[in-house]
Amino acid sequence: MLYITKNHLKPGMILSKDIVMYTNDNYSKLLLTKGQVLNNKFINKIEFNNIEGAYIEGEAFYDIDVDSYINENLVTKSLSQIKDVYLEFKMSTGKVGISSIKKLSSIVDSLIIELIYKENLSYNIIDFRNYDDYTYQHCLNVAILSISTGISLKLSEHKLHDLGMSGILHDIGKMLIPLEIINKPGKLTDEEFEIMKTHPQNAVNMLDGIVSNDILRGIESHHEKLDGTGYPYGRKSSNIHQYGKILTVCDVYDALTSDRSYRKSCFPSEVIEYIMGCADSHFDFNILNNFLKVIVAYPVGTFVELSNNKLAVVVKNNPENIMRPLVRIIKSDGTVGEDIDLLYDMDYMNTTIVNMGYDYDKDGFKEILKSTYDIKIKK
Ligand SMILES: [Fe+2]
Image (cartoon, rainbow, N blue to C red; front, top):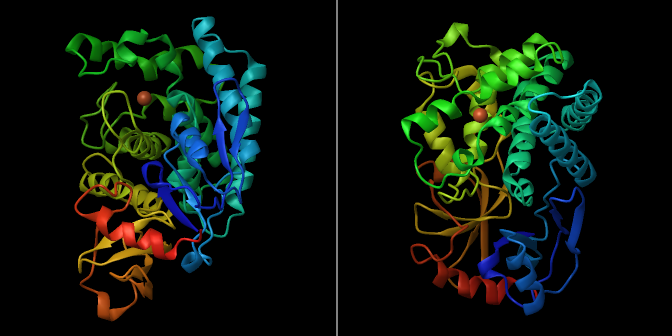
């Protein structure tokens, strides 16, 4: 299968995966089913629902398969439970019942079970962008990324649970921050930023005695940086709780790869480069190393442009080096060429990925793709 962004879907393409929307009313909606032949009406439906793109069948890419990272029912249940607890926190000005926390705790246990038995942890960003409320999706994404990183770090199940709880609850304190500040499109004033900086402590004050001390320390330190330039306390490396160090990487990654009202999302590869540049100043090197084993820079089925000017499709990721996957070359006549392993194939050691194929309007991508679609994609 191939991943095609919404602007480039064409009538006649066949969906190779269900398209599911997670709505604000606490249920998942099957928007379109696998096997559906797209027409203009369906393409409009995808655009209308703000779905970034879809997996479609391609004869030359039949062997590329993309599994869901977390099963859809668990995602729905998790989002609904996160929303309930966050709203309960808001409505009761910070008081959350033990029973709500217990429900969240069982969600975290289910996420751990789902992730711990996976043969390969490779977080597919495309799976986690179909929800119409950013806050809850973000908290779930941070929990999933944190647990995955914790598994890579070989943390005990007990620690994975507390880490996941910290991830799911990390921004609950924002529910007590005025919406004008949370949703402000521009830069916050110094005064507004001071208010924003209270959100980790808001959560800790209100959840004290309801969740474990380690969960509280994780939430409290999710904006701290190793060099002491973070907030709320400006703590330095050894004084930052391990969970906080994990959450901060996952939080930054998910925030920067998401569309916000004030900026467009960045590509995973761009965010990875940024995060790697902050190793040891903001982020713990060992944690970052393990985080980089569970995410992918270039999701399977997406188009990439190589430094030798060739276009290719990502076939498989190499967890040993997420920047250098196995790719399938597309020739200039639109037919498919050889598979190249950018990590192990010595002939291609100097070849790098220079562009991601999400935005085909960029840098002449469009022309190459025009012929590729028409020739190789089943009609
Ligand atoms: Fe936060």
